[in-house]
Length: 363
Image (tube, rainbow, N blue to C red; front, side, top):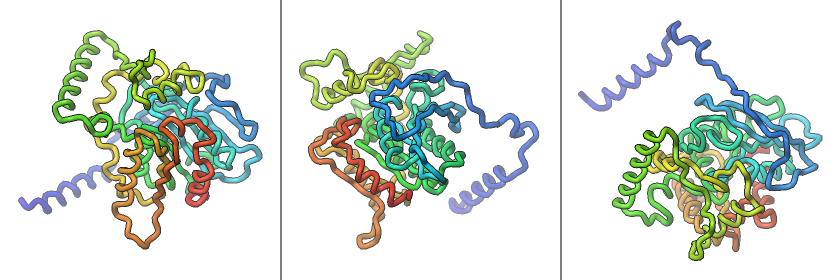
């Protein structure tokens, strides 16, 4: 049978299926969107001081998989009308009390309604088992945050953006590729988590090493099934080895010291479940990044070990750009900065440039 004809038949059959009247045995009453009641702390337990320029509160919202997410909401004081809004998350293995909250509070001071949320299975958000990472569900978390912002009367539904930090930078770009409601995206000091898990740092892993890692992770699954619990993979190494690479030293300086330690942070403590790399190894996150039509800004430190992720992502974002035409994709390299400098160092993070970017595409 002609392949084109077969494709058309299958497409028509699928279309007929989704447009047919839903059977009474699958009524919407059994498919409602609901929010789980979460236990949220009432104290200010962030790694940064509270601003007197914004109002802060806690909110919750569900994602498409039925997991309820917890977020800190920041609103500029004396705000009026419908505001542009931003949803923020990251770094990978962090919680909203760390870098994402710092970014969210700063952008609220600059006139945006913002939320910093904990990803599924981590922090104060719901989802079991705990401490799981998923390229699909974590990408969905960003779109769920957009769902929530769209329901607020004080948010302009046409002026919503997202910010992803570190591993959540790659997830933010992935979300933007899938969700055109996201009008502007910032990826700060980004990681491509699928690439680094499959290929190792600097793409140094061979196919044989990748296979050996799969064997190791498969054996861990067997052990977990027999034990009845999921073994944690470990957070940032502690104590710090004398021969640790500089970027590991930088991670330690953030996650394991008063500068950035938090009791709910995976990187500060026991880390993700040991088998969490498995789905990332098998699902390239940025496959359709070149099809993003809305604005994207990548910022990265000149001295960051991870700079190659942003450099290569920018090439993918602009692969269809025609010289001489407008380009809404931006790559900003911060002189002298390392990877974790862009987590919390307010004199290094280029917030003025970030504000200009979001003002152009959201205000």
